[in-house]
Amino acid sequence: MQIDRMADSGWAVLRVYPKGRVFEVPGELLPADSGPGDVLEVSISVDREESRRLAGENRRLMDEMLGKGGA
Image 1 (cartoon, one colour):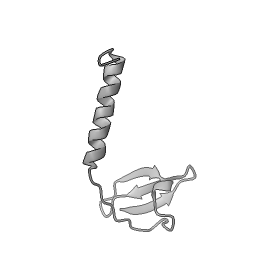
Image 2 (tube, rainbow, N blue to C red):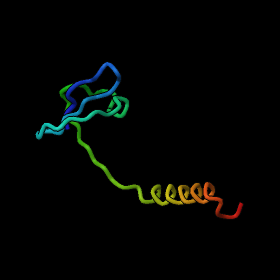
Image 3 (cartoon, rainbow, N blue to C red):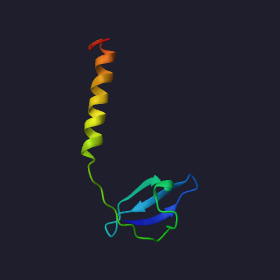
Image 4 (cartoon, helix red, strand yellow):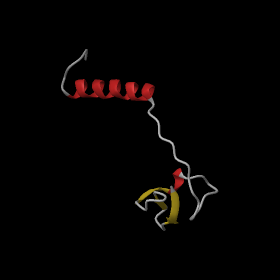
């Protein structure tokens, strides 16, 4: 993935390299020393523990909204 440009809004325009598809991300997510033309190495993984925690929290909130549970 290559940094195409930094927008005035603080967002970075990234280009999937070499295919050319573009999308924007908040510039604050990029390494401080990166800039237009730099190629980024990207890795995405699932945080199973956090996913389970959030699922439980979402269930609790839904139960609360629907008047279910031990309240």
